[in-house]
Image 1 (cartoon, one colour):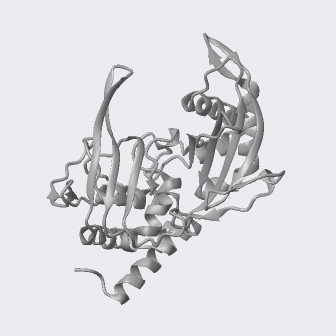
Image 2: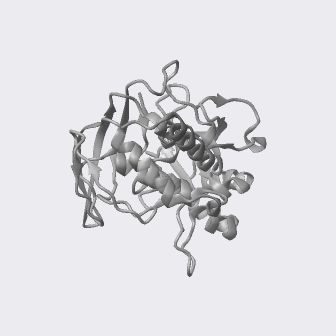
Length: 313
């Protein structure tokens, strides 16, 4: 049964309030890496070391190193490959969330230091060059000019529906172009519900196992958990109640999963994930703002390396 107008407005308002509590800074960094096949993992490692050398406090705040008694630790950043662009190639997107936006200037200084530190090639560090840094806005627009150090953060509530000229209540696809690794039952908000299989039917959820397909419920749970951890004032919202309402919305929506499972080896450990798309024939309903934020937040494990991005088409 679809929500009535009063419930619709309440859910929309609560989700918008939650997303408004997560400020964001985002940059596109154009690189020159002569003689080096730059990878996100290598760049992230160089940046992490540079930031730790530059400012240990900011490093711990952004990388969210686990402190005693802190069970909310979660990295506040993403480094991902930028969309293919013949002019800006190679390039990465660097995004920070929540309290990390307070340290924008220091973070950009750390990237300059990382370029000097260099990327490892055959055991030897090879410096690289940062050609330019561009500001990214909530709608994905690139701002050119010397404004990178002076930008103001935007919030996840500012992210528009990314399909230009299309109503968010029209049919859409949630595309997961990179390997996405979600547990069968996420633990972001301490709840365990049923998921949806490819036909929209309930399927049992188990904890601790990586899923071989994605359900809308899993994606929503994971996104809400990430918003919760990135929020500047998480105590002002009832997250369990919000999750319950959001999951109820999932069961109101028809959805179909089309994709494939991946497994690969990393340090003698077998890693599972999947890639594909969720089709929403009736659109995302009340969940559109949260799903739109997924283009920036990503879902699942290894999100700091750009895995788990949600593209809406």
